[in-house]
Length: 209
Length: 419
Ligand code: HEM
Ligand code: FES
Image 1: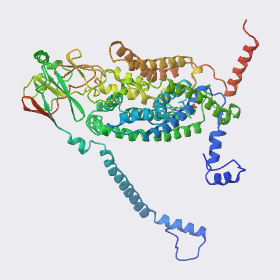
Image 2 (image 1 turned 120 degrees about the vertical axis):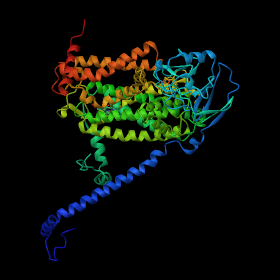
Image 3 (image 1 turned 90 degrees about the horizontal axis):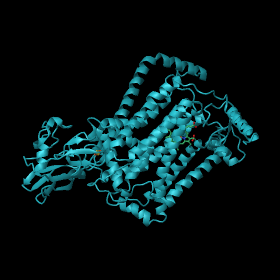
Image 4 (image 1 turned 180 degrees about the vertical axis):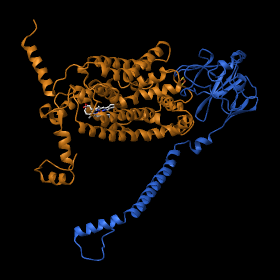
């Protein structure tokens, strides 16, 4: 290292040590600055590369292309009788489509928005700022058909139809009650059942997604 | 575990090996001659029982993977195939399933042993905290393992538990989608759970190694809670405790095999013999029994985020337990008030377990709220205060003294038989 070749003289080990030490100490300031810089630069590069290389390993767990590709289905809703519901699968989740009775629609309309635990529409087809009035829970003013994800906003169970204290849906897992517009009324669930993006292809046909 | 050998081996091969890798020295010092308090009771055998259970789960698990298929279309059938077609598959599969339950029985006893005898107090705080980490890793392993047979309860348990993370503000939904690898629990979820269920037991092995390392730095505690003072207080680990542990392990396995052979489904849920259906939630979903107390805490709180926070807090609180308990006296034997609180806590935890199994309605919700409140009060209020106000009973000056006093009491009782 630094002092090993002290002028080509023959020197003993102790002397070499001593001279080495002396030489190192005279070079200390510039040398240690250089070293500090190299240490920090190397360390930073190492941490940087490690950080960057972690991302692909995290992101690989996100939904892959084949999962994302399965994102729309068409459903013929004509055969659903008044007071009947069907459940179809969309992106791995149940979607509930209900042909509501006039009474259910009236009940849903009668509730003041201010009384609802979640006052937001949660409808992908209307503005984010829309309130949870019954009209904002359906699409194109078609009040008969309520289309929403059958995924309890608490922890994801499928609520049971024609059940609960509000004549709508009841989630058996932890006791959330939804009304006839799929709005949370009682229980641990924080939000109304979400209405997925969908559109009417005809009077009796919708495309979800 | 120092590299320096203080043993002299007569066998030249052993001597040759040991001077290059002192593994024989280490085994002799740590697993045979290790000085162990002479007064350990059977509650101290559960560490050895746990180590045995870990090995059983590893062996049965690795064998099951030879026949299991981690795919939503085949997983359920492949488990049935193991039960019906594979040679001894029925027993091996049941041993793994019931083994998980018995692993948890042992860990709960082991932890309550720690609570009763104050095993978490200085100098064993780190040992205790590694234990809590082991417990968390066990819970994660058990949860992911239960998803693999892809029955109805597997699916809905997975959905509800992963959805807990959706309570996290702002990132919740993104985290859940990331965990699932989709918009619901599906094939991607099953496959990653399979991968992690295989990985975590090896993480457990590493944690157990650290746990035992820390144990061998502080040495074992003991029922009296007075530290070892001299060689008189200890006996060598082998054969005294190897044999005591082995006896306890065999008795424990007798119970395990009793379940495996005679009542293999008792601890499970019949609905898990129905294949997973993402469109229908079973009317009454409950987790495996060993998660029930925590599930009850989750459901006792009507707010989604706070419920999740309380559930995790109920476990994480154990990490700081060594600093919450202000009493210097370890063993509950010498802490009359703490002993009462301890038994109340046992009842509270069992009560939470009962509530967790019931539908979240009416009286059950009220009961779980009261029990949840007591659980947190116990750790956050009663324990810190009790250490300041309680007057402990006088401690024996050494382990030997307490053992001799017990023997003396016994022999006087024998000398004067009751009329
Ligand atoms: C796979 C799980 C576990 C294994 C294999 C394991 C193994 C062991 C073993 C072999 C011992 C020594 C014998 C004994 O005292 O029983 C021990 C001691 C201990 N364990 Fe565990 N353990 C596990 C989980 C836990 C957990 C979850 C906790 C607490 C949260 C814990 C806390 C302790 C404490 C505090 C001691 C020292 C007790 C003393 O001797 O005073 N362990 N463990
Ligand atoms: S998942 Fe519906 S109430 Fe909990």
